[in-house]
Image (cartoon, helix red, strand yellow):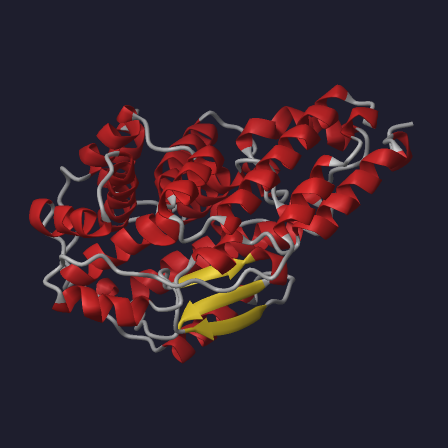
Length: 385
């Protein structure tokens, strides 16, 4: 009898306990500085020599208790080997994220915890980034790139786009974020940067990326008997970001300009491994790559926030993995089940056989048909190693 009752009771108890424990472990809620604008002004006044001193939100959970209760889970009682291995990895992964959060702002400690949770670019990843930077990007004066929509206009465009999906979510605005928009999974909320004016291309990218993938997988994750599909599998960030940028590609909105942005993020994270300070990373982008100071500052903040946040290189590695998965003819919908990782597809199949995983209800609109017409983008994606 292949139904949910076959799965051991202890699995659901452990899954619920982990869910209760990790609800507050939303790293992006803590790692974004709350004084970016003030520090940017000081940094520019210092002629790019004095590193910003960022401050961060207060942590509102008992870190030690969380660690202890995570490791108290009796995972040795889970009968299925695949599932036991998965939940062991889950406990280590969330313990790692808690360590990231508790060391935000302590440069060396946070960087090493970030390394353990997200890794760092390989030499090949850096070569891939540099390969992308050889290509000419689209003209900045092209109409699709010109600032046009206020945050309030953009909210309306998000709501219009979302009508095709059978779910609802909150939209909030923020003055303190390094991204121009992001989804907070645990509270089903899209956050829009209050200080940004959005172009047609940005709106197209963000609707497909944030709603078409991040919000779709948030909502699908909630439909499973197991909460881990909603909270997130170990290493899910790489697959999630890969799927989200791939949605930009499929909807014909992925540009060379955007790929270069992802490449610069790899270079920025690599600069952490080389021991660069914030100001040295910034000057690398201005002097070597000829970026304007606003762009250079934003990319440097993303990598150096918290004390050295390595996650940003995963957008490019994730995109390549998802692109190759799609090209091999496999079912993309399987990857939309929730906050899952390509690394755990066998474990998920095992859960599905026992009635503990379901197929996605909400499907990414752009995945229905490949609308990409940009031959340069195709050439780049084919030739990333």
